[in-house]
Structures are given as structure tokens and as C-alpha cells.
Image 1: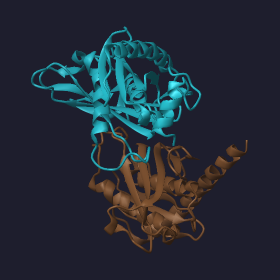
Image 2: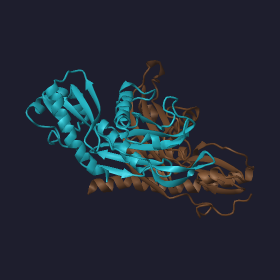
Image 3: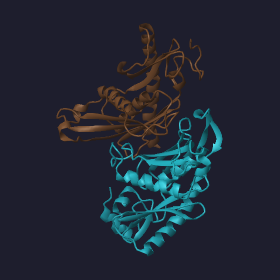
Image 4: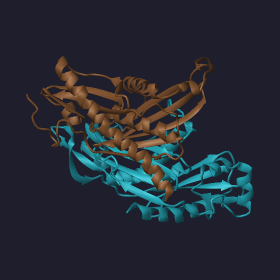
Length: 257
Length: 235
């Protein structure tokens, strides 16, 4: 473990402990599709350096919300497994897992990444419900970006199961993908001292005083923001962080092919 | 309804294809992935660490604590509700009992050794895959062990004793008995035995013998995977 004060010192001098530039992702970055293809309608594994997360999509038919009778629903859930790090413990999700779930969810929901109207089967009665479940296998920093990438990859990978007499037949899958109209991706920029860096290791996360998660669609619009950490940011900071996230989400998008 | 031919063409005493790898969770002290057919289990070991709350500590012996969890998307049908269930708690318990006999826990008084098992994809035989993976993770972590633990389910499907049931065979309409077995390969001692269904004594013993052969096959894969890590390190 590297202490926060040491990270602060070397960051001020322009270095990172592993020799990377401030705006550089750890390598290798990889996206693998269909890692639970038999079970999940869509699934993916994402690795960013030592961090590995898996995500899966399950589809089910359910009743729509009464205020949106002709729209399907989505639910994103991140569970921080004790398998993935000593930091996490068994039991109900703690607040950081809830925050992460909601931030990933927001990126996908707020830009209507999935065309919810096309998820309607019978208005007012039956719609598709999309469940995205994300789990870290090895939590080695920057779970936000890894989870966001994994969620999008799993959604892209998903195929609808068949409906037989109004019931889902999971044994048979159609060739139809989810109606994805936008592709939101998140990049989290962390502020250490007065520097901005991305893709932190766990030690760097501990040293950072604040962070900003920015979601960009593939059309270049910002579709979610979340500031974390105790320290405040100036509007100049925010401008720089958003610009950096814009650049880096474009790079991350390249790994989705 | 007699089950005369297996749906995937295997012989009755043949387990599904087994693949294994250790060191899949770098954060953990020891870890392993085991894939049997389409069932994929990952296990990671953390500890020994001080056990809390303190009244649970045993001054003579460490505690082995297992968790078993199916990822929400890992079921073939509906989404699995996240969080612990009665089923997962029971499986965690029998997993502890299956692994405990090979460990020397008296070396770690007052501590707990955590073994976490996650299922990424399931096609029956998950507890056995979990136990086999957990045993490899413990060995990978470097714990002193009397033996490995290899586990596989056997059963009687449509009157036919066989080994390593897949989901189709577990749900077979002509009657299916599922018998998960874990074994210490060196001594042949059995550390897990459960049974779901109805079976006569003769078939039961026949199936258990088949499971022992299946466990040996898994043991070979476990050994090879543990050695492979050091082969790789040599390079």
C-alpha cells in the first residue's frame, strides 16, 4: 500500500506511482462478450488493468409503472462482492454500492439509452423489464468506469428471449437485440491535490479528495454527473474535468467493438 | 421413462469438460476458477484475519467461513434475486463442512478464513463446482492441507445411475435423483453427501462409486491448474 501523503507528493511533481500519465488508462483494457451466454440474455467482462468486472442482463415481462403505461423499465444494480477485495463485506449493500448503482443507472436512463417505448408488449399490461447486474471480480480501483463499460457492453450483447403464450421462454432466444439508441459511457476524473487524473489505483482513490463522474453519449452530450468526495470543486475544475472525461470516453468507446 | 442416452452424448460415467485456473482474483490470497460444462464458479480466499465479534473467536482453532452466491444473471430462467437466501446459506454451510477436514485450523486460533464462492453461469452442479474451486483457492493461498477436495454430483436419472448431471438431467421428467458428493482424492473419504429425490440402495451405491471416479477426474484438472501457475511463473 502507498500512503495518501506520498501519492499527494508525487502527484504534485507530476508523477504517478506506476509511471502512467495522469490521463492514461491502465493496460490492458479489454471487453469480452457472452461470458454467461447460457444464462444471461446479455453479458460481458471488462478488464482495466488489474480491475475486472462482469455484467449480465436479464429480461423479464412485467407490469409497467402506472404513470408510463407504454414504456419498459430498467434497473441497474452493482454489488460489491467480498470476493473482489478485502474492503467489502457480506451483507446488505452499503452506501457506496448504492451510489455506484445509481450513478451507472443514471447514465443509461437519463439519455434514454434504451428506447423504452419499444420495450412495450401490451400497453398498460405487459412490458419488458431490463435488469443489469454488475459484479466486480477483482476490485483494483476505478470501478465506476469499469462498471459503466461493462453495463453498456452487456446491453449491447443482449438478445430478447421468445414470448410463448404471453410467457417468456428463456430456452429460446430471438435474434433481436435491445433497442439501443444511444451509448452512454462514464469516465470518472479524480482530483488529487490540484491535479486531475483518471483510472486511479486503490491507493490513488484513497488519496483523492474529490471526483467527478461524467457520462457522455456517443453523440457527445453529457447525460449524467456525480460529484463525489468531501472537497469542493471550482467551476474551472469542473470544466477541465468534463473536457478530460469527454476525451477519455471517446477512447474507451474504441474498446467496445 | 427410462433414460437410455444422455442428451449431450456423454457416457454415463463421464463428467462434463472441466477447465480450471488459479490466481484469477489477484486481490485475494488465493483464488480459482472452475468450469464444468457450462457451470462457472469463481472462489477467492481472504485471511486468516481476526474474527469479529470477539465472542465468536475460538482460542484453539480458526474458523472457516464460506459464502455461496449465484450472480443475479446466472440462472437459465428468471433473474436470481440478489442477496442471501435459505438455499445459499445451507450450501455455504455444507461447503464449510466439505472443506474443513483438509485444513489444519488449529494453526490459526481466534481467526477466520473467508472463502467466497460466486457463480457466473449455472447449469446444475453449482455447489460441487464451488467446492472444487474453493479447494483450489485454498491450495493456491498456500494453506497447509491434508488433501484436496474434489466434488461432483452423481445421480439416478430415469432409472439410470450416472455422473455429473446437467440442468436437463436434473429436471428430467422421468424422475431424477441428484447426489452431490465431495471427496478427498488421496484417501477416498467423503466430505459432502446430499441427496434430492428417491432412489434404492443398490443404485445409490452404484452412483456414489461413479462419483468417486468423477472426483478423481476433477482432481487431475485441479492438480494441473495449480502446477500450471508455477510453470507460468518460471517463464
